[in-house]
Length: 143
Length: 493
Image (cartoon, rainbow over all chains, first blue to last red; front, top):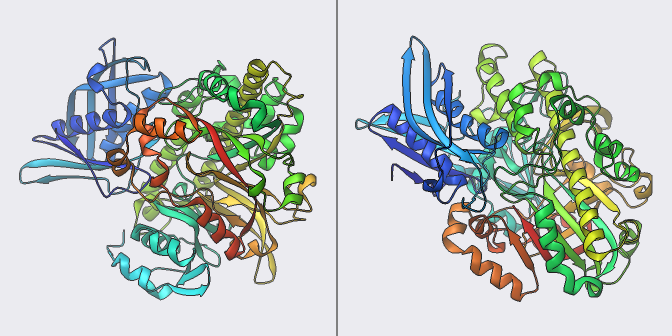
């Protein structure tokens, strides 16, 4: 599993550390973790529709936050569960950019094991760093 | 950012007990504190609080313009930015407004509805009522409400709150009188809200949400009436009377507004406003700045959306009771007792060192509790004080309280719930949703939940003892209990 849940997240929230050999893999693992907080069986999400997710910031950790918020936005605005299939993280000068492809379907309580409704990605302990050649992202979601 | 990581347990040790349920951490405890931090709790509740609470409440004491002290309520627990149960009053001229002091779920709150029914009248119909409520009040991830609103209509909801609902047939005119702020903040301006926030919330009016949000049928047992006079004034006077209580907020709309303005404030905080704080979750702007004012008006839109959400849910509850019991909702006496917010910042007048001052009061997981005779509470409650609704876990029960004159010490504020003691992750490992559902049924509580995992997270043992929290608010002089409610049916998101 490229992510693990934090035992010491704030009492009312859920936190995780997502890891990957590359930044792109790390961001994809963070997207998987976010979906898994909302849904007990992410593998049940079928690829009925596609979306392109974009994020940009002059800070890498905020680029991750904005990217993950895209998943939360589509969950509320279009009732979509999205699985991220491909991520590209780029740096141009001072700006970090994320472009990701995602596929998914309308939330269906008869097939999807609904779990917690994520309200937001918080700044609490938010961190993206390289450790021994691997990228680790720490994220706390507000539930 | 200040690079300072104080020993959190050291902060707890520096607290001085001022009274049986009041502790104070002096400004000398941490570099940057402008005022003391105060924690309302009895000794056992104080010991139960996680170290994060002490770290966070002392961080709040660093906010520019904070008046008197940073405060944490007896149900306080570790959040982000402010602790949940946090209170801070700011000078509107010199002070800041912080989304972290309000919460992502702006105007998360409680609504209580009375009935003319006794438990004996409906004992056998509880499953029917809960099943129907479960169908008619959408809950859980991605749920959409029955109102299909255009962008223009949703903007009107954001502007006019519960009043819009009543004007469109979703409620009774007297409901507004029984809602904090009469169900609408006058300063709401949807032009300060992003298109994304409007899009995120537009289909969610009339939905419960998930997490700790719920809708419950409860009973007032005769032995749980503590103040019969106040209870009668609030519409509770029949032995074993049935009431309906629910807890929800502004859904994705409020969440997005909070997220949007955190991103606006973050880059400006140090560069433009010269504010340095130890935690990015305290991102803020001077209240008087253009950015601070924009957030304030946007945040009021979310307050209004939340009032509208609870108003539409009340409408559905009345429909369900009328359909299932085949009696008119008015005949069933389904009148509102009150609706309280517990995640807001509002401009209020308070006395500070003998002078009346207008203050921006942040309450995050804390409930306004105005005393008898104060303006801004319904005339019907002038003699007893503002009703305060404190929700417990689905297993343990909830309370109706009233505000008291001694509440002025905490800007007339009290607790909001029982407060978690166990993380969601830990609760899910320790409890099993299906087993919990069976256990509750054996104890006479019929539960319908969208999510067994979510049900496990909300197990009663994951929360503080609600009786202890309520007793602490009374000991501290923040509020007095009126009645205690026992759950008999629950819809959980």
